[in-house]
Amino acid sequence: MNARSRSPGSVADPERLARLGPPLLGLIVIEFLLGMAVNLFVTVPTGGGASVLGASAVLDAHLVVAVLLIGISANALRLGLRSGRRAAVALTVVGFLGAVGASLAGLAVLGGSGPGASYAMSVGFAALLIEAGYLLRRALPSGAPSERPSAGAAGARMPPGPV
Image (cartoon, rainbow, N blue to C red):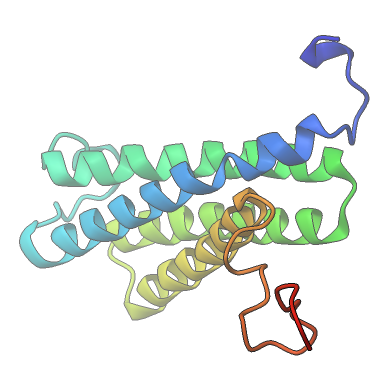
């Protein structure tokens, strides 16, 4: 059975959704570092709009990564909706809205907006981190250390032997 013939909500969708976690988190970290570099070391042209393109390689990279984050979040949202799982739907909606909101706020910052737009970027960033955390948790193999009871946990099995 190929991927196109699977029904919506098939096992492949949650697996594909979970696989988006590591690249999403990696791009979030890169975006954060690029954003800090732009904030600290780049003089953004005052014209806004297209005048910012080509003004700085760091700013251009920041914009490209933002577009990639929107794309990954949109794909996660699509897969979350297909999975039919409430948590997947809710958290991928949060992540997608965070990616779009942070990007729009970033464009407002480039246009000369004040601290409110910068704060909105950080809220969108936090929403993306929530989505990435959910996807990474889904990507953990079953029996991962976080799911195994510790040796002292109640109900943990003792090795066979005399009592």
